[in-house]
Length: 324
Image: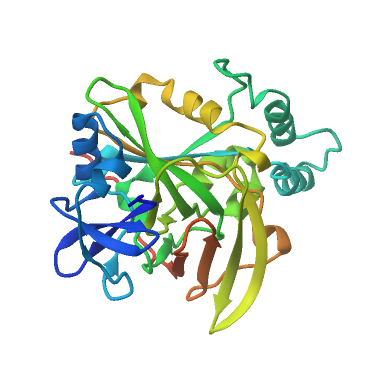
């Protein structure tokens, strides 16, 4: 029976469920996705085959606590990063905010980078294309589990959703990056800070992020279509379709992967990487300002479970450096 995706859960003990056309079943002998991936790599097989060979009892995913589809026992060995200006149409909102800030009719650096991707982001097989924008978000501690709050720091000027696909990777013992699958996610950023000055993009990305429960195995469809919405007090205050997948992108996934893993520091054996591929759809572009308690929801086929997380605001912290 073909395994479609993997889901980590807790029903009093950690477990991994494999979803098939007939529902979800426990993967015997595996407590984490990473453990199962290491077993599959050592056996020279795929995650889908390894999970399919160990199917056990049925699991009711509505009756267990769902976890993020990937984690690491040491969160410092899980790196969360991403790319921007990778989707057709993704430069419009960024270009508009930067032009307004600069009051300059010339193309902004963001638009120039986007057009570079359009021209050279999908090279012929085996070739290396133009490098995308890249940013760091944090380590494994920033990932909010399904249903848990996306916490925005007290100093943030905005906390807005970004509906995206993330690639999930582990680095083999010989330093080779291995893609485990794909997750639906909410990359979550501070767009007001970014609008203030594009050099603050790095600051705006140092925020929490969320993944949906499913790790999709196999190939990502070329055309992925979904819906992003914000719910406030039970009422949808904003909703918009979004598209992703290579058919809607100015970069190929292979090009994004190359320009991430070309750095030796990102090929450290045993590490896990969550790499967001970008988006073209934001409520911020429509003038929406999320508030504490609002619920972000991102849904898209072939994922069957949404990314759903409330927004929370962290208390003010007084940070003072002391000399030793």
